[in-house]
Amino acid sequence: MNKYKNKVYSNRWFIIALTAVFLIAGCGSSSSSSSVASPTSAGAGTGAGGLGKGPAPVALGTAGNYVILAKSGISNVPTSAITGDLGLSPAAHSYLTGWALVLDGSGVFATSAQVTGKVYASDYAPPTPSNLTTAVTDMMTAYTDAAGRAPDYTELGAGNIGGMTLPPATYKWSTGVLIPTNVTLNGGPNDVWIFQIAKGITMASAAKVILTGGALPKNIFWQSADVVAIGTTAHMEGVILSKTAITLNTGASANSRLLAQTAVTLNSNVVTQPAP
Image 1: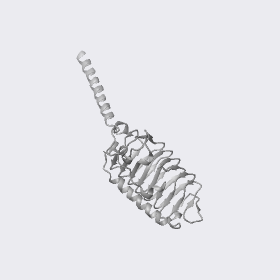
Image 2: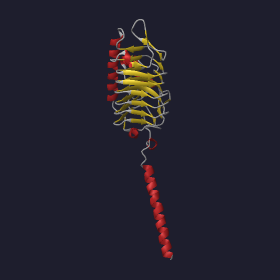
Image 3: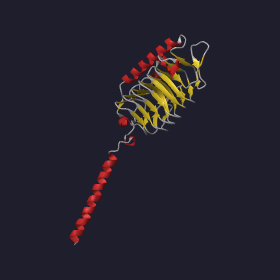
Image 4: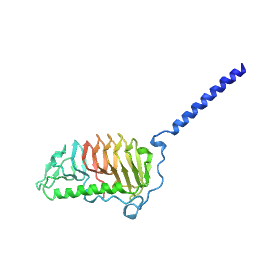
């Protein structure tokens, strides 16, 4: 009898130990961003003007004159509040929708109660068409520049950077990037970040890009080969260079420049251009 009891107890302990092994293994294999350590060292480079850390800034050229610049359309579900100029080319002003535009007497630009700035389209009076052609060319040049920088970190978090604190550096992914929870960029006012993303950016509702240590949105560059989707009430910081479209869902905000090689879609958003 004692031998039988000992065997039962032994089997029970074996099952308990085996279960514990599986639980530990399961925890260790988690793919959540919290299981991936954030980098602790800045990447190569001396930042803006040689005074900081990370890569040199991406030169925007005349594309930097616009808070929103797009090629095929800029649509809006009112009411949005935009600080800075809008530019659209080669599409005509009819592809600027939801702005209640009023054409200036010069014919060079229009205004909107939703825009603290001017609105330009390719079919407005000169010199607007040629200025916009140059700006769009500069936007595409900036995209290529950002995409071509040598990366310091690759495939961080398998594309999920939620919960991370990232130092100035050049980051590269062969996938899209997910921001399901807040991500923090920590660095000084001359530090620079470049994010090279082979697919799109998906930012969850209410998620935020948070800047600490004096970091500035003008020195942050998100280069994305696919759609950039900013979730409802989410908050973005930095210059977005998208090869396709940029979409801000209801109530999202951005201290950004939205530079898209197709369209920008807004829905009751607040977008403010970064200070120079």
